[in-house]
Amino acid sequence: MQFESPIVRRVSRQIMVGNVPVGGGAPISVQSMTNTETCDVEATVGQIRRLQDAGADIVRVSVPTMEAAEAFGEIKKQVEVPLVADIHFDYRIALRVADLGVDCLRINPGNIGREHRIRAVVDKARDLNIPIRIGVNAGSLEKDLQKKYGEPTPDALVESALRHVEILDGLDFHNFKVSVKASDIFMATAAYRKLAQLIEQPLHLGITEAGGLRSGTVKSAIGLGALLLDGIGDTLRVSLAADPVEEVKVGWDLLKSLRLRTKGINFIACPSCSRQNFDVVKTMNELETRLEDVTTPLDVAVIGCIVNGPGEAKEADVGLAGGTPSHAIYVDGKPSHKLKNDNLVDDLERLIREKAAAKAEQEADIIAKA
Image 1 (tube, helix red, strand yellow):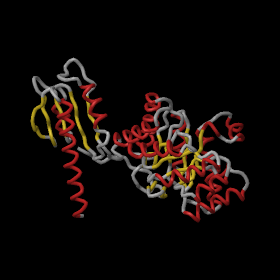
Image 2 (cartoon, rainbow, N blue to C red):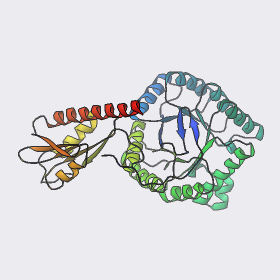
Image 3 (cartoon, rainbow, N blue to C red):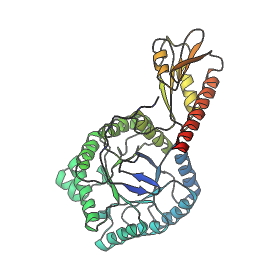
Image 4 (tube, rainbow, N blue to C red):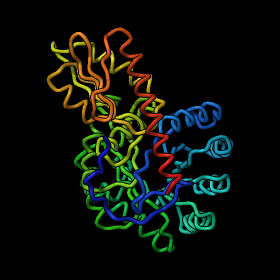
């Protein structure tokens, strides 16, 4: 059963990254970034499609050279998801990918040289209605800020961000979003909280270089979760040293946990103990793998015994409460039937898919009648 989130979100301006609204109360979008060689068009397109299938709303691609810019143009033709070009220093690359259809430019105005170069990029972005992301990172602060603060700090991150904001404001360009990322949770959250009070543009959240799959997920959940609970954040990227598809999955799990977005199955499962009447861990692993393609929001409870099983199962769209010799199945909070261990995963998968299909049909009917 789905419930509304009690989180009151920060009010921000809205920009459009392709067809995806960011800010202004729009759903928080999930991003990731390719880690293929951009000039390998086939590999990059393949990865982008996998990211989109996993639920990525926006994908960022590094474009370090003019050769990569040309490859980006070919990539853009072959995918549907909005693409952000990640560019540093060379303003000519930004101009080229803009002509090739980029949906957003990740480029810090202060890092691309003289005023005429900045103006050229901004004018191009304005003419083609392309937003810009100002991306401040604790690992690449300006030298004078490093000297002033001695080390990366929240205030240093915010001061850097405001410098770039001032440049765009001075050019009367307001179609941008901002990030102030750090690998340290306390530094990142403090910087975002301060910046959120100083500008009205949407904020792109991230704990940069968070770590591997397990440790990075934990750090991102703490840092991003704290900000999201405060109502801060309009789009996010979970940065993991792992398959980028995992970044998308974690991002969605974060938003689902906070009831900020719904997509696919929200599993409620016990960690299992000696009271379990079936192998909960094995059952969950198989169900998660088999049902990754289901996008209809659905709560599914898989509980191994009768202590907490009935209570949790009654609160889910589909619930399993372990028992002896058979297990109770609940649908929409009501007892439905019983299952035994034989073919348990197959039976559960079929039941969940049937419920997802029925719910999707109901939602379609409501939309059609509206």
